[in-house]
Image (cartoon, rainbow, N blue to C red; front, side, top):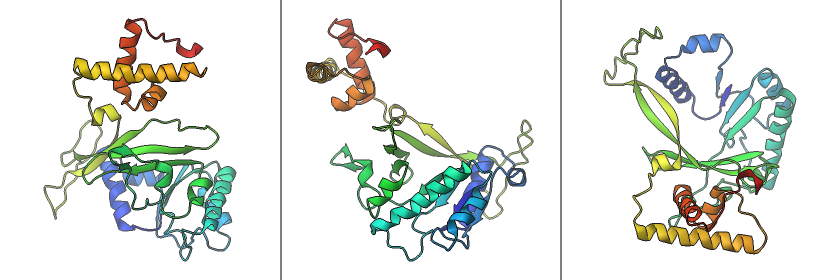
Length: 279
């Protein structure tokens, strides 16, 4: 279920295009109860008895999108620390119904990158720090127009450091104007714009897929090897094991793909040993 407090018809159009991109029957999805879009709901997150109303609306649902947090709280100042209480309310609704609630919230003016380095995604949410504090999991998403959107996990409650590596979401147009005999899809035609392909899809992309590593020269490799070896030496000197190559990549300030190549080189030279899950 998608509770759309901001867009209205635009959200409906996007769902239709996503469905067409996968040749899905939207009326059948709606009729089966698997998908519901509620545009501009009359009940807000700060309405009287909102918690009970949300529990009834989300009962039997597996996933709820609330879009956007600020629009669902008219008259509430997002810079006030008390705004976190509304997320705790959603947490109680989720606990009671078993429905995961994903809340869309705008970022501030800060960029996800600063001076060529990634910013701390925990600092990007607009408004009070209580918003990030009250959320169970936090992901920051941003990127330029017509570019894949970078997604960074900023928080994973109870799990310590983020558990999901950075990734990208890429939006691609899908031409569904012709019928598809395999799925029985009748095809789509936009009389106002015959060139309209009609659908789109969202695809997961790794960092390496979006930013393929450049062919390394011998000098580049030796520099990466030196950085990784220095990181390993510093960690083990204090009795700390190197948890994994991803952690080492961050510690050595390298891309994971480059760090993996450096590790393989060091292993071949007999300078480090991969003990797998043993340590």
